[in-house]
Image (cartoon, each protein chain N blue to C red):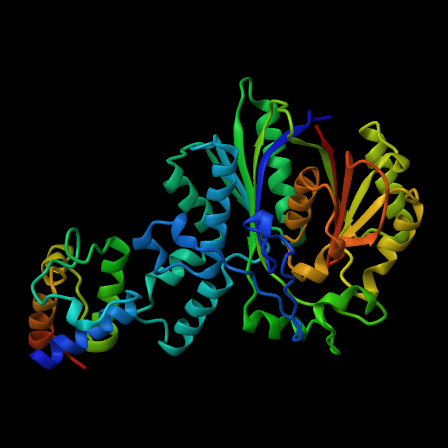
Length: 85
Length: 355
């Protein structure tokens, strides 16, 4: 799980071009949107693409997506349960 | 005939240091590989730091240039935003198309798609300034900035009260674009240093460039503003027609060729287009200043935006920078004629008057 979270953080930084950030700067449980990393709605679309491209996971339900994308921890747990790649 | 409009401010991002105008041509930038890329300012002064990380160069150029033009005019919210681009956001479009192929149209990044649309710059400028007024982007290759100016002139002429239109242009150069256009003989095969471009006018092709230019225009005459009296677009002009067209255009505005104090010309060292300029330059008075700029910016569809920026700057300069001078003149810098052409046989004229 720890390896997955580290990899996920690296992928988030690269895919969202979070310049000057390193995986250690992202808290596992901090909210990705709003106060935490301060991501926005376009970032959420990018994260959906990240999940689909790297883990074969397609999130069709917006409410489920909001829950999954709330933190690195929630994303990693969802990936572990649902990954196809 | 439409009334003139008045340029309150101008800002340009170009391969030269034009963003901070006091540094313009203090250090001259040149290229030996036929490509002139812009000298980029610190964009973070003008763009939301959260959004900037996913913006392409062209988007940053356009937004920063537009915001700076408004700042210089002391305008926080324009009544309209009208822009022109010949190519749109090439980087984002190239990313998106490459992803379409490599990922077989699955799981494509939304950012490249969203920002590859031609009106991205306008959208961002509207969001940043909270301007909900008329918002338009023209994409017509070599006529893009000209059509934006024409539309702004109509917008400001129709207005019953004082209005400000933010008008601008932007085009970016990418490696792929350069390769594609080299197959269409846009660029010189034997590439001179960019500063020597204009003397290499016996061979076909030119050098590639990019840039952005923005202007705050209003319908009320203001002291020290520059009036845009009119502009004209020409398709496939012949040598003979071109001079006649220029004379006809000037006479409509009560001016003759001999009244032109400064001519800013879009000569680009391409032997195929010298025919447009030679008879015209020969017809100017000895005292007329003739300036050229494409050896400093390279060629791109909205390069006449840079020429317009130069025209606005003239009133601030006691001496015209020597790097611009094609023919030295003695006239005061009041009546200015911009003559430009683009590769696909389109040409444009702009007549300006310092107030």
